[in-house]
Length: 288
Image 1 (cartoon, rainbow, N blue to C red):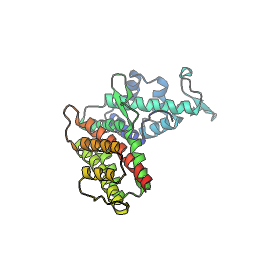
Image 2 (image 1 turned 45 degrees about the horizontal axis):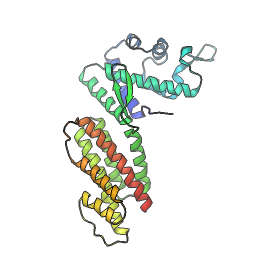
Image 3 (image 1 turned 60 degrees about the vertical axis):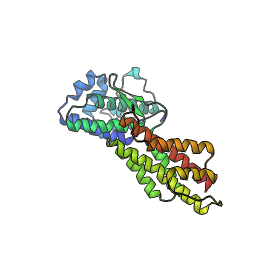
Image 4 (image 1 turned 180 degrees about the vertical axis):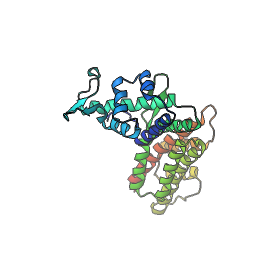
């Protein structure tokens, strides 16, 4: 599927927000229709799915939401002709469009109860990990600057950790998981700490492995910054890479950045750790 998409963790979080609407007795037919959802979408959601949100969202993801069978068993498309639904790929793209629109709808119009605010905040953070923010006025998702989806980068880094043979891989994987889950839970400072711990664990493991098996006389010392310098002296890092990792480590270790909201600081720190973690492991795999 081309382009950035809402990933499965976010779809489950969306389902949880929409279920709060159900619990509050919301008239979905009226509310969806008045917020720009077409009549055929609203009727299909009501008549085929009875507002059972996870199967509905899964149908949208599969592209099967837009089809039904008549009394003779023949497949019929429910979409207006002007939508231009001509292929399975078109159905997949249209399903993604409505998943994103429902996500923006859920964030913008969630009830003001404590439970609703909690699950809608969780959804917003999951969407940010997917690389989206919400335009509440237009009920759309908009890409966060750049092409990075933290969820996708987490998957790449996790795969590299499992296949690289880096020391203490279980510890590294736990830091990845915790940094992401803490962010989704709204625990910004603990999430940032785990992002820092992730880089520290990788630097420690790689420098120890390099010291044990490398053919050099440079002595390994303690501390992350000295170990970054150690990796440069033994030829693992170039001078430019040392500067980049020192900057990344300094940013993750700096604590509060005045003028940057805690949520954004935690999100940027997570993305930074995921990207620099991949660079470390790619170099480590080549070094091994």
